Amino acid sequence: MGKFLAGRLASILPTLFFVTLLIFGLQQLLPGDPAMVLAGEDQDPNVIAHLRQKMHLDQPLPLQYVHWISGVLHGDLGESLRIQKPVTELILEKLPVTAQLASMAILIALAIGVPAGVISAVKKGTAWDYAANVFALWGLSTPNFWLGILMILLFAVQLGWLPASGYISPFEDLKGNLAAMIMPAFVLGNAFAAVLMRHTRSAMLQVLSSDYVRTARAKGLSERVVILKHALRNALTPVITLGALGFGELLGGTVLTESVFSIPGFGKLIVDAVFNRDYAVVQGVVLITATTYIVLNLLADLAYFIVNPRMRG
Amino acid sequence: MNGRMNAWRRLARRKGAMVGLGFVFLFVLLAVLAPWIAPHDPLATSWGAIRKAPSAAYLFGTDEIGRDVLSRVVWGARASLLAGVVSVCISLSLGVPIGMMAGYLGGWTDALISRFTDAMLACPFLILAIALAAFLGPSLTNAMIAIGISATPIFIRLTRAQVMAVKVEDYVEAARAVGNPHLRIALRHIFPNILAPVIVQATLAIAAAIIAEASLSFLGLGQQPPAPSWGSMLNTAKNYVDNAPWMAVWPGVSIFLLVLSFNLLGDGLRDALDPRHT
Image 1 (tube, rainbow over the protein chains, first blue to last red):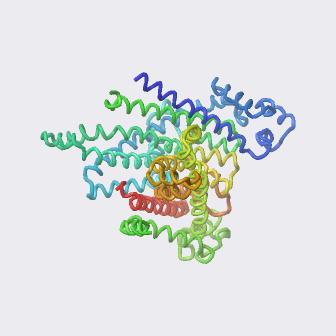
Image 2: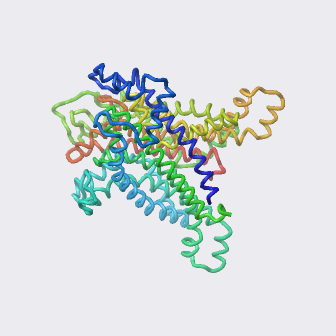
Image 3: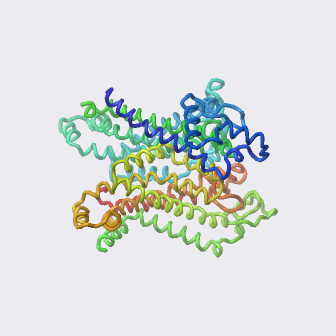
């Protein structure tokens, strides 16, 4: 276990290094002098000179990177030029909102995607299989911001069951919070459910044709035990890894979902930062998202290692 | 040639793929013939026809400044298809050569390219595209570049894996043994044999790129107003969902149908070109 963990950790360090290079490099895409772009329209020469010095723009590129990365390693992602607050503080403020949205979306996706995948594989070639595949295609082809608008139209405007947008803290009003988050969570989880359904179906089909499932059936075990205890448990291991890879799409989806439902989370932060030309915030959000994604994949690999005895041997 | 005919026959037997191909063809026709098909000027405003419900005069209704929604949907097909195809061409033109270099040369070149690809794949596709579009500036061209670059690592990884599998085949060894230069081996002997999975991935990537363009336009980072784009139409429509829902329905249906068509076609192509998958 220790050896596996050390090996995996060693492999993510170069990836993290290249992630920082990539995100630092984004700044080089700004047309012209970054200090002038960052200073905004007033372009006071004093402000520009101050920015140039503060961001070490008067130094060679490798030195600029060294200054930036040493700040990042100390938890300093820079300062928002518009809100005049440290980027780390801004991200930490918004993170719980997005974490709640993403967690609810994952639960919804698991509750729909895994059973749909199992039913589709067990009832292969029937109307159930066909319906599950249609659901997967629908999930993968529907832009989540459109689904969000349609759900607002149905559940908020027509039926009046749920609020159209906004966010209430769960510590203030838990019921209100759940009412405000259920629609965005469903919208966000919809595409992820489709991805999970496809992975579960293909893993289940493979497992159902294996020798040990045939043996379990030959022993006279009930179909329910064969499917849930013998087949699904083994089929879920690749689903964990593939599901973690799909988590990146889910994080991307939060940007649009939060924008449609006016949820003040991580995604809304990056969109506002883009329009305020608050580039340090954009870089900070991308860095935190990429790091989260890498860590989640590491955790998925560990989970795979723990549930798969052959890897431990 | 025989292989291609067989692949086409396998594709033609798949109803879903044929429906997808039919819809893609229909959308291409819409985009090309937009000036003749669209009943109204997509940019012409009419203060007397603000947010009119669908009627004989305006089949899909009108928007918040009296523009015909149908005409904007028809013209919007251009932006979506253009973005889908151009973005994927950018990804292919960067990803395939870089992936071939990594797979064929191996060693440090491969290690360096692979680590950089991992880093790009660690940034969620849409977030990377938003960040790139933000730094490049909002426009359809920059959105296409941003989407193209963001989708490149998938093609690098796919091409690399295919090249590594093909380069140990006997016919490549034979080409090397008779003294062919590396470039000729890569282009004449390896490239044609890795094309099938690349074509399948490209078709599915067009679907993803169309959604990404619509997403960037929805956020205001793609096609700029007043030029018609399905994503920006939905961005405006969300503000009028209670009193003009038709503004939100048709651009969304169009994105859904076009993306679904490319997904169906991609799935069909995968089955036709890679029989092992089925």
